Length: 454
Image (cartoon, rainbow, N blue to C red; front, side, top):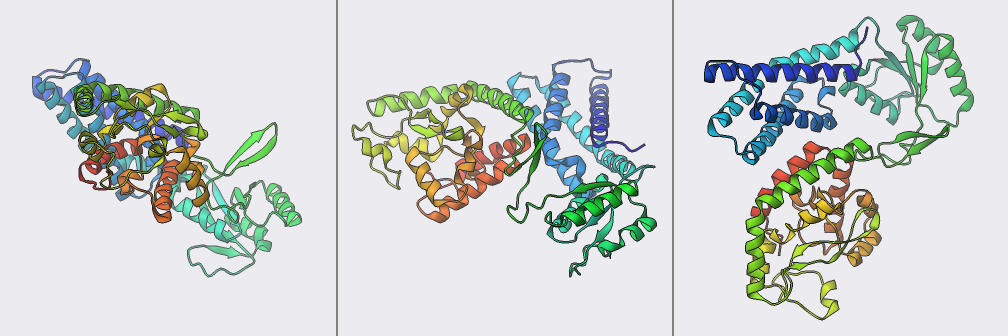
């Protein structure tokens, strides 16, 4: 019997928990001379691993057949696991002995996880080459055929792609062309495949019906690829509205409720932790602002949020109070005379953005996401940059993928606008909790080194 993907992932999860328990027990025995009990430390270990595990499901960690790529991702997963655990140790004020035991457990766990990855590869091979597995034939060797070939190269556990049938000769040597479409029956008699994917043009109705009937006559399960790639080169999702098939043109990882739930849990937890840790800095900045100039500590400009809604964003005031409303519409420039001395300092290190953790708790923003823009800039960007408003599918963030990749600061040229939006859309397409953690870690370095903020 072939193991299903979800079964494999669940088995791997259980094995990892056993390995983690074994590591914790061995380190505890070597350190104290007796088997350790269930404590706060073990709770931190297990919770950190579960969070890391859920985060890396979005990276397709278990779908990769290349052992070197799998090893690199294992190291990345271990680093995230270690970071989450370290933050928890600080938060719960764990003693030094327990911290040493935590580090020892992590190192043991990493060491025994390496040979475990080979076992996971074996599990996946069982799914592919078990007594019953999919042997797949593809009809049509165009761009869609190449995309299918690439998919099976990466997701080898999905079945065995035996080859292609096509009436047009292809120059690609990456595709195994077995013959012409008319050779269907002859190829079946030789290879006995059990699934066929039809990728030919949907306008050829008679040909498609003939192939479907021929497939079912031989007990082969047929599938038809709707050729939308000629219109849009992106991921699609087929939905069912009362029996009517609807193709989603722009699907993102944050569409499912579970993904939004875990991102919201992360946002609330991280924001509460940040506000608690940064409270002394908040107080210091507030006092400095009041001592230098008259006016409120916070500045609450209107920005564009999710689905174009206007939101009031919390920021530390970094400019002198002005009665001229036109000043609010002016973009900040280098050596802007409106910026105070305190404002210059907090803007340089992005400290003026810290109160936006309040916006995250309220629910207007996320810790990580596209940066919110002024309403007037939003309209200008919409007219200048293609698909600009797609970034509003999700909540804006305190930091983002564009900012940690060098696109923090002014957007005075069309090129600057396009590059920032490109990174925003890239984040939208590839979101995961692990990616959020990576962006947060990179933000610290960017804030210290970057010279684009003023």
